[in-house]
Structure formats: C-alpha cells, structure tokens
Image (tube, rainbow over all chains, first blue to last red; front, top):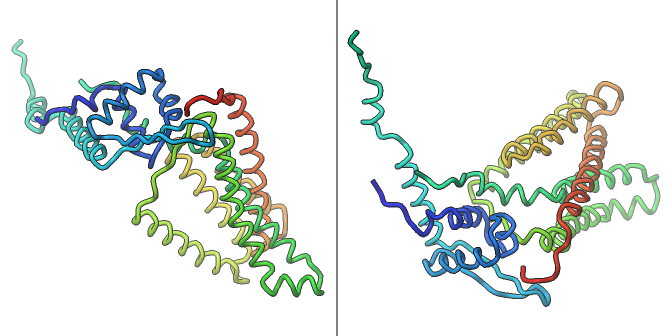
Length: 109
Length: 209
C-alpha cells in the first residue's frame, strides 16, 4: 500500500491544493473565503506548501493594494495526483477482500 | 480513514465562483442580443447612402466592435465588482483536446443552421435553435452543478415554443428574434443575480487581497 503524503493529507492544505488544482492562479482573499480559515492559519499553511515546493507565492500590488497570488506548480500537481491515487487505493477494497466477502456463510442450526 | 474533504466538489468551486455574480449571464446575453439587434436594425434600414455604407464593411466593423467590447467590459466588471469582494481567481486555459471538441461542435451547428436557413427547413429553424441553446445552458449548469443555470435553460425552450406556435416568424429572422429574446432575458437575470451578489458581498476595506 502506498504511503500518504502528510503535507497534503492535512484537511486545510488539501482544500487549498484542491482549490488551486483547478485554476491557473488565485489570490489570498479567494483562498481565505473559500477555505474559511483565518488569515494567520491560511498564511501558515501556504508557507508549509511553499516550503514543500508545491506552490509558488507571488507578492505584488493591484494599484496601491498588496496582492498575494498563489499558484500550484508542476511538483504540486504531481504530488496532488499521487495523493489522490493513494487515497483511491486505500479506499477501494482489494479484489481478494471483495471475494472473501462474497463467500456464503452457513450458520449451523 | 480519509480527511473529510470532498476534493471533487472543492475543485469545482472555481467554476461555480466564476458564475456566482451573474456577469457570465450578462455577457452571454449581450453576445446573443447585441449582434442580433444589429442584424435586425440593418434589415430595417431603407435603401440609401446609409445602407451603402453599412454594406461596405460598416456592419462587419460594428460586429467586430461588439465582439471585442463585450469580453473587454466583462473583464473590467469582474475586476471592479467581483474580485475586490470575493477574491481573484484565473481559470486554467482549456486543453487542446477540449478546444478541438468545441470547434467540432461549433462546425456541426454551423452546418445545421446552414441547412435550417434553406426554404424547406425554415419553419424548423426556431425550435431547433431553441433546443440547442437550452441544451447548452442545461449541460453547462449540470457540469458546474449550478441549479440556476439549469432553470435558465428552460428559457430558450419557452421562447422557442412561443415563436413557433403563436407567431409566423421563421428562418433566419426567427432565429435572430429568438436570440434577442434569450439574450435580453439572460441580461435581466444576470443583473438580478449581480444585485444579490453585491448585497451578499459588500466591498471590504482596502486591505491585503
């Protein structure tokens, strides 16, 4: 059985990665609204994902307002796909197990 | 045991978010109604110098201006209304396979409309067009799991039935009239959706986004 990626397995980080997996890029406010995390929590999780090399964070400005853009890079995409594959393997019952379940049981009376 | 996160539903959020503010409906409505109104207006111009100018590239220039200004306006409105309230998100570019598929669908429908423009099939032009637009909206609504859009898919069917059973319009004029009706109703529904979006999401103070 393949081992789960602990960085991605944490629910908040998994939500962040799942959100980023379907978009080109998103800003901090979008992730804040969609995840329901606090600013501090979201920042911490983003730093962890950045340290793991899964996301790229770009700090820029929209006019005079600071804007933090977050993107899932190719390593992050691969890690997310691997994680999903591992989860499927864990959650799908093996063929051997499903055969065992189908064996009729005779209870002596 | 897996974490309680429905990854597929979360990944779908970006598409749903993109449609939450009603601007997509407004844009679709304007794209449908704008050129159609122009087509009807040009058809109503009496013979004269204005019609000559229009036939010498004026119509094409206006179509181009409408075609370019609507997506430009959509982008500007998104930046002004939606992104400061709920955050900025850029959707991924469609894959090459998806673009080929969409081009094939477009080519099939272009051929179908060409057939329907002929005199023998002109009576069927309105119901078939209505069915095509209804299916497009319903499938889009089902794909992004947005019930509002599925209901909006019933509009073309209603307008198509209205034109088919209660009027004598047919052929290209019927199609254009239908597109004006669908486009105008989408703009109205989009504007209502935009109003409730703005009420539900007041503009936050200008802090970090």
